[in-house]
Length: 339
Image (tube, rainbow, N blue to C red; front, side, top):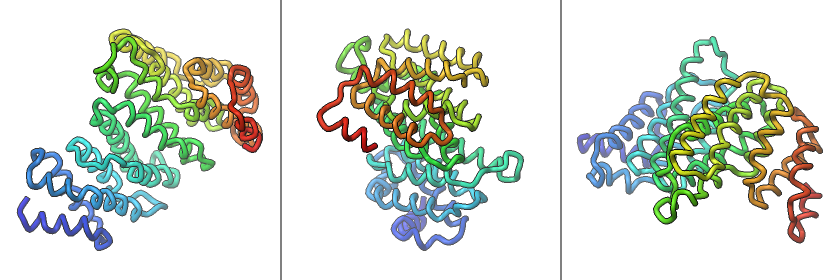
């Protein structure tokens, strides 16, 4: 990249509101990707982006926020996802990227329902694929902190999974299922941050990926009136179960492959029976921490008070399983009552 082009790129990062045309935005994103993929670490171009990391992250957020919320007719969203992935590989992302990821999720999940046969279907699928790829790159690029990164992504997805807007919830649950499928079928023991300090047999890190609130909401989503949301939630829970196991890498890989094969064999509406939903929930209960059990109890109580599209009997079953074996601290009981 010549000095003039670099100067223009730097000015674009500092003054994002000046972008008006789609081609200007795409040129900017392409320039950032080019630097990330072709410049060696600690080179002048790489160093320039390193110094401008906060401004660059803000610029990407601006691009996403400027996209129309009522339609998908440009490739800017898709290119932003690809740019974030390229920056992650080049170690040019801020450590705190939550605001940027939330902007990505809002930009895609809150779009109006897409016609699967319409002219925008191809663009939507490509954009969704770019987001999935970006999330996978973020986890893998984190190396020994990959488990923490995966858990953080699941945490950021939670508000969308519990959304009252049907299309937002369906997309977030489906995204969670795809992400869980990716990392439940790949042998990634090297992502364990404690594997360098303790024997892998004793490693408990994968268990921390599955959070109480996530299990609670996905279990209830298995009883959702929308079939697509039901199937995605069931798959997400099924694929997350290997995360709760503590085994040698070879045994964990074998169990992950068994889960993949089992899901593909049973991926049908019969998995949505109440008994199957409750069985999947019971697989996780013995691995939950006390605070996580309390989180699920809160989720179940809220559902009983306002069931909406969920099964009341399943929410009651969750309470029957958790309450007898949960010890509440002083003040927690009144907190449960107010919830």
